[in-house]
Length: 128
Image (cartoon, rainbow, N blue to C red; front, side, top):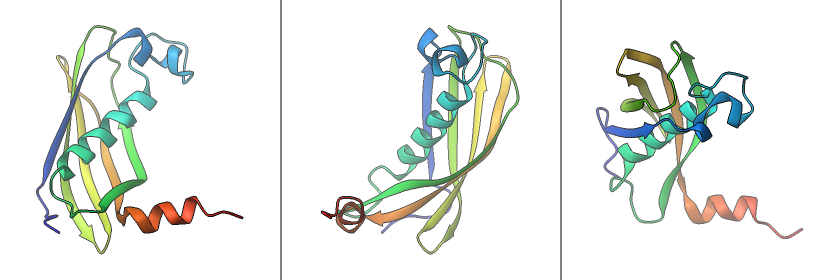
């Protein structure tokens, strides 16, 4: 496994009507919805791990802690960056930021857990 502190990942999005709080059911304003922002943060962390994990390994989200600081309108481009900050056994924690043309719109931490895909899937797909 080549997971190391400092790994970086990125995700970008042009905000559409489907990405708004109204469309996602998280509010009644036509701006980037927090659930979509969380998904972008997760996407950036997965991007950081692309090509780094061993065959048969993956990671799953465990904890997301963010502050959504500023609204972003439909049509604006959002850039999300993730940087691996801490490794504790199988738990890995990223610092994440999101910006648009006006500057920082959100920041926080995303913790993921590295898994063996076969073992993980066997836990959720057991026949009763």
